[in-house]
Image (tube, rainbow, N blue to C red; front, side, top):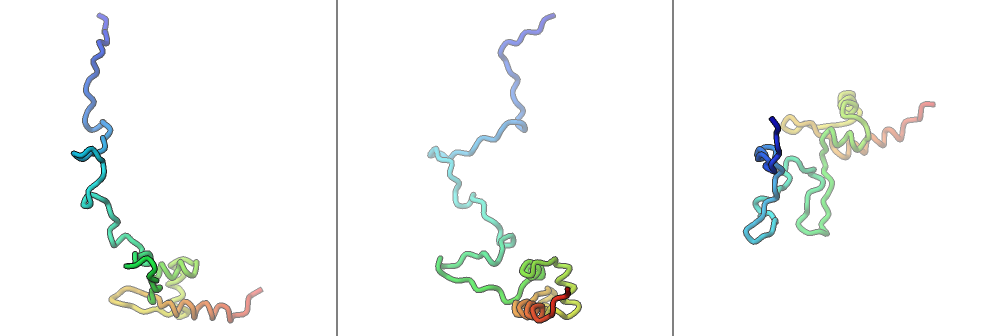
Length: 119
């Protein structure tokens, strides 16, 4: 018995078909305002907030997260916790959240500059 291909192709299952872009009734594929994706506020960096006017200056935060302090000092967050534990870097707790004052980071850098270099 021979099998002949007659040009008929079986239908492609729905789960394997490529998705077609949605088009609006007017023919455009522009998304509506409500369908546009936006980044949730808890995933955005607070230092990159959009100001009301483009010329407005956003002041730097006075209290930093430990991770932000580590990034400024170019060290790891574990090392920042070590500096806090030994008293070399001052910190405060606000409702259980550890914060490092920006002035404390500047003071720590000044003490590093005052120390004589070893070797």
